[in-house]
Image (tube, rainbow, N blue to C red; front, side, top):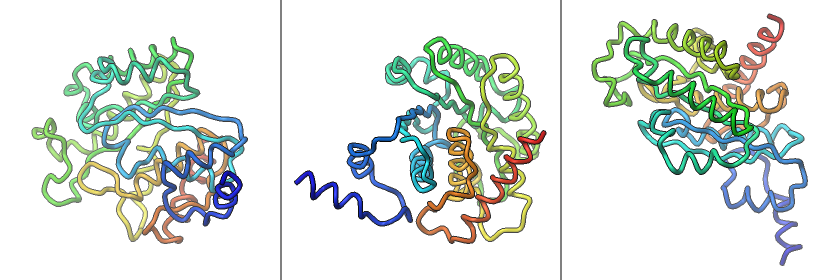
Length: 267
């Protein structure tokens, strides 16, 4: 039976869609690559479209030399302050991870005046991750958009956030993360910056699913950025694309990420 299972796994079709967790675990049993681990801590901007596990599919399709083991601790509307107090999160943080990815609640990033304790909580969690011997990484996300229907997807706590402040929200997100990096040395995976660049380009798709959350294209953009960070490799070698995304659109996003990171390396 073991030989039959191995033969079946070896001849599975290429990565044209998500690999089920069960299949991924079965493959890992025979996968002799060294393991690299990552824990994602956040909320809906992290878990939409199962983005963290999309990183694994991307890495495998590109022939990455390491086997990514990814865990996710993300629930709707949960702040980093909530995660600090969570027994589940603390149990996960007690384990050894190569990378711990942290994502600030979107409504806490609207402005410096309305962030409350969010950035202090982020600093405390970064320090905790560092003290436990893991490398913290900030998932720098994006501003809200008014190019959507009504207030679809907006958090309940964002009811008094005016669309007139959405452009400044991007500036606040960048400033606060830059301050965190200067204060703690935390690494930034700056999806929000490349998100703005893609939004300004002509395209047949939208990075937003609603006024807040990522579409499959937005999640793919995020996952490409994390794959490049974890691996140090160019994303042009990636062949995985989510189901329903055209080859042309996936190639466009990979090209944008590749060029953006190449320019950053020169700076």
